[in-house]
Image 1 (cartoon, helix red, strand yellow):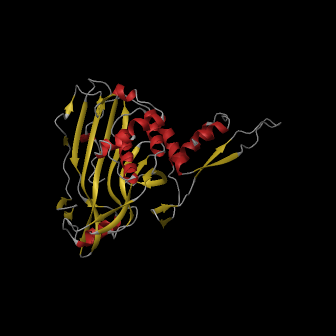
Image 2 (cartoon, one colour):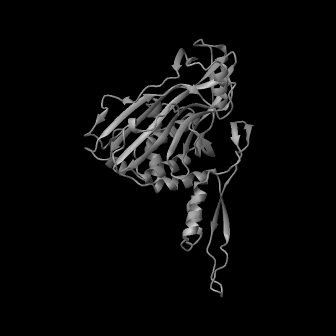
Image 3 (cartoon, helix red, strand yellow):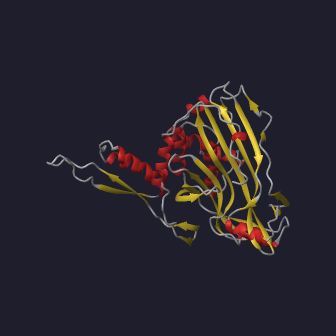
Length: 391
């Protein structure tokens, strides 16, 4: 059921608001939400969030009184659960404007554990940032830029322990099957890839033309059939020729990444983006979890896969402290007011193995959109953007 449309259809259109009412509404919308984080408890499927519901109050215009005034507008309260709040964000995505150019500033990173004598802390390493823009039509141009970001402690507690360890500027970490090193020094922006800056480019987005994207269906069921079907999942995993797909939890994770790529890396039309969000919310093994926070500290409405275990053995060597089993899930977060993609990330749900000293919610790896949008003017190159020493 579409809870948002149900609410809209159930009540008549109120009288136009006054200028004072509009100003007050804007102030309330700009104010950060004050919510108590839902309590967590351990269940058979890992960490489970308490089902706190979002509350929406709808004021209806009252009738006229003999004195020429009006009766107080009754307030009706409609409770939107986590899924309803997510669908409201999809509705907001549907109403966003478009333009002549599409630009995106995105970065990705991986968390690593540093075990120093003064305490264990986490750093973000292997972090790179890319900025690109594309004209919607051939001939409007396109450009790609890239830079490496400095490795840095993940949070305040990690930063405190890093300082206690002497504020090292190089980090030697175990990465899967080998040791790797990162530094606290980034690189400057540079043109990325062989194409770099093409003043005559544009009109092509990940192999699809702007016309192709415009002609995509907007219905969520049709989009799910086109992008989230079994055939697509087999291609994504290499399970072709009729072979069985991976476990359902892995398929749900793949679907989240698939939709994140479609809405985060290509300028799909607003109604298509909204349809993809609705399609993802309806997939088996994908659940609305309320609000979550991305690596930039931005809160948004989120969907997540069921969690699953990963066991690290000593097969490839490495520190014994890395070995053991932990559980994690894939989470995708969208801006509540615009429906824009904020990040897709792997979150720890049950500590163990390399993350035995971390807490549930710890971000293992991520790809985040700092910003992505349409504009009618040619986007500025990264040299003109603010400098970020760390995300």
